[in-house]
Length: 77
Image (cartoon, rainbow, N blue to C red; front, side, top):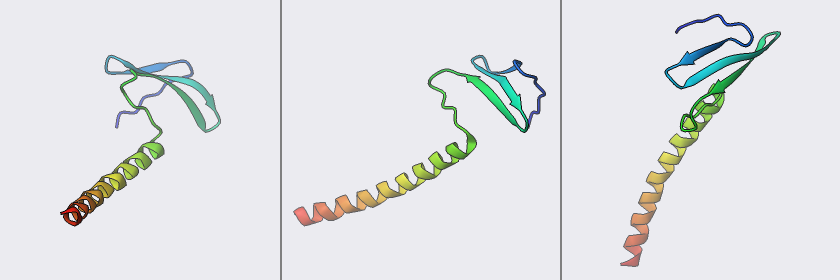
């Protein structure tokens, strides 16, 4: 992990098109501003992990739907 020190209004650049700026420091919280292309998703980690869990559940559900389709196709014959 790369650890950098930044002050308010200072930034870091990731690649050619992602910029993270320290907007505010208040107590133990830091507000960050993120500039990135629209095609790049930016989420808080806990939200990202929840999205991953939901995607895994949905992928498992699709397998169940495929099995149901086979059952319905058999009944239709």
